[in-house]
Image 1 (tube, one colour):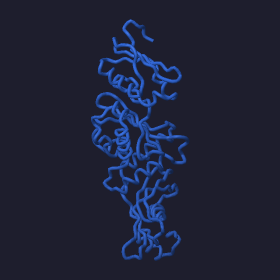
Image 2: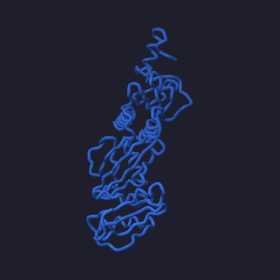
Image 3: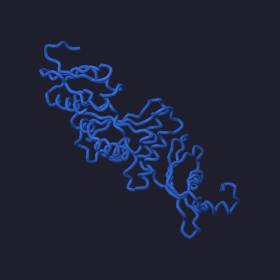
Image 4: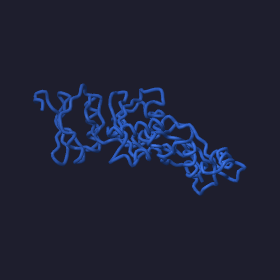
Length: 300
């Protein structure tokens, strides 16, 4: 029913009822699109059509997001009412950031972050993603499944969560999936989060429509403080192993030892003896082989 088509007093009474209507069978939080919504009437009628619950409604033409809480009005026979709510800052920033990258054809969104960052909301993060992990580093992340999982979940949640409303926090993940998988996106699209840890090492996580509940560590992208690629599960694959070929330089023996431990954790030994804090690795088509480089050996 459209209130614009109702005569006189009937239309006025319907507007005063906060755009309410008889309840529908639907009663769940959701994310929807209404590119034709212009007036508050349009937005509220769209929200009511979705049934009881919280609803994010996106208008891609006006690049705007509205949030409504639809609920049965007391004393009115269960008539549904659409009450407009404040859209959390994280939701708006997430939508506009992804849309901006998409329309400019810039590829995946890339965010550079650090546990040293303060003052949240900050950038694409509505909440602090590093709770319990401020002292971590790329080696720990690459080697510990528990750390990767919990940190990945923190990253996903922090983009739109932390609102103080558990329903909206959960709906925020649905919102992210809807935006990242929008029809306007051609091919894979996601958000890369490059973390620079306090010790100078770095880890890269990615979030896509298929894994909005937990950002995933990108294999082969972790780096030590000197820029060396940190060995992980990708060293034993034909896709990632060749990327580890080349010479590695370390400023001290501790840095070298950390790298060798990561390599050995993947079942790959280092041959020779250390005289220069340098290594050379080659891919033979099936496995990665690494050896110490002596001071007497020429570079390359």
